[in-house]
Structure formats: structure tokens, C-alpha cells
Image (cartoon, rainbow, N blue to C red; front, side, top):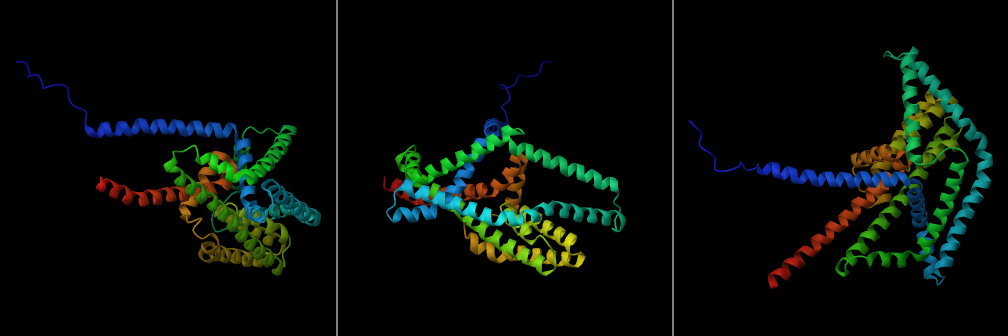
Length: 368
């Protein structure tokens, strides 16, 4: 006996329809992200040049604005600040670099010696089983990771004379770009906001100002905290009888541009230098001071120095650093935190604008 025919084809479950809708949208977004990453990787030298120019322009924006309020023309204000900045950098380099060249040349061998001492202790005296082969494998993996990171951050850069030419060209382009950002910043901002509908321009202007303020607060905070940490660790190494205090202080300052990870690396470098030049006891003292300084920065100084410009959870900071390093190498680890902070603050400004406009829209609807 034949089975009765159904009423029609079975309807697709609503959950499947919902997931399919989200699925193809996610595929489109994924394709856009992959294409954007490919473009950034191909134009990485240009992107890095623009980033350096923006950083330089943001750092020099306060003195340029001060000169413009005193009646100096925009072009002359920008040129004067750029010339003064590079004059100071050149003067400091001329006075400091020759006296520190020998110390910096000793930093690498000192770290190698300290690392060898640690490896020997791990193999011979450590409470857990570590063989020389395990140490060699770890060295190989670290070397491969560093090489991959360098290749990723270099993008299309090749070794030799081409790399030097690209670096010099990028620096010149960055200086020229920074000059025009400082000179024509307000006009360029107006041009960008005019690309949006008139009712959205105030919101876009506030979001741009928020991003600019966030970047300035980040650079100022990194400079202050990095200087403080470098001075403290340098003085500590000197007091305990170690050497190479100035190179360690400079490395600590530069490492502060990579939050969390940079602090760990700088602390390890300071401890290894103290271990190789002063002994185990001084190295322990330096380690304790490094930990205390980091806690002091995180709990007391950072909220005051950064204010509301860098209110990011440590996990967000850590994940952004890892993602930036995996995608763009060393440069990605340096740029990850400020870009993440700018994105978070811009989105917060957009949400605040929407929340402020919602009651007005409701009142207009009720009045209609």
C-alpha cells in the first residue's frame, strides 16, 4: 500500500537559515580581512613609513600648536620643530654614542656568557632533568622564531644594498609626511570629515580627536614609564657592582614600547647582565627590583600617567601583542597596543554618541 504523500517539501529549520546567513557574511568578512592583510604585507614598507610619520607628528604636535598660537605660520612652525627635534637627536647621539659604543659592544658577549652560565646550571645542578640536547633544540627553535619574525616584519625588504636604500627612502618619506601632517593637519581633517554626510561629521570629528588623544597619551606614557624603569634598573645595577648600566637602561626604555612582553625582556636582560658582571647575589637583587618596579608601574604609575587613554585589560594587551607579532613580526608587536587602544576608544566614542542620540530620536518620534 502506497504511503500518503506529504503536504510538500520539508521546510529548512530556522536555526539552519540563521547559521547560513551568518556563515556567508563571515566568509565575506574573512575574505576582506585576508585581502587587507595581503595588501598590508605587500605595502609594509609604506605602511611602516606612514606609522613612523604619524608617531613623529603626534610627538611634535604640542610644540607646533604652541608656535602657531604665537602667530608663526604653519609651515614654519612644522619646519622649526622638525629641525629642532633632529638637532637634539643628533647632538645627543654625538655626545653619548661614542662614549657608550664600547659598552654596547660588550652587551652581546655579556648576555651570551650569562646565558651559558644559566644553561650550565640547568644541565648540571638543576633539580629537574635537562640535557644539553634539550638546550640545543631550544636554541634552534628560538633562532627560527626570531628569523621568521624578522622576515615577517621586513615584508618585501631584501638584504644588502637594497635594504639600505629602502630604509633611507622610508625615513626621508616619513620626515616629509610628518612635515605635511604638522603643517596641514587641520585642513586634512576637514577634508576627511567632508567625505561623510553632514549629520555625521561632528561624530567623525570627535572620533578622530579621540584617536589622536589616545595616541598622544600612549606615547607620553611610554616615554615617562620607560625612562623611569630604565633609570631605576641602571642605578640598581651600578649599586650592586655590575657593569653596562647605561646600555641596560636604554634597552629597558626601548622595550617599554612593547607592554608586558618588553618589561619581561628588559628584566631578563638586566638580570643576566648583573649575573655575568657581578654574581648571583646581585642578580637576585636586580630581579627583585625589576619585579617591584613593574608592580609599581602597573598599580600606581600607569593609571596616573596614561589616565583614560589606555584602559585595556592585560589579556587584551597580551593577545594584541601576540596577534601583531604573528602577523607582522617585531613591528606588529610594537604597534599592536596603541592601535588596539585607539580602536577601543574610538568605538567607545561611537557608542557614547549613539547613546546620546537615542533619547533625541525617541522624542522626535513621539512628537511626530
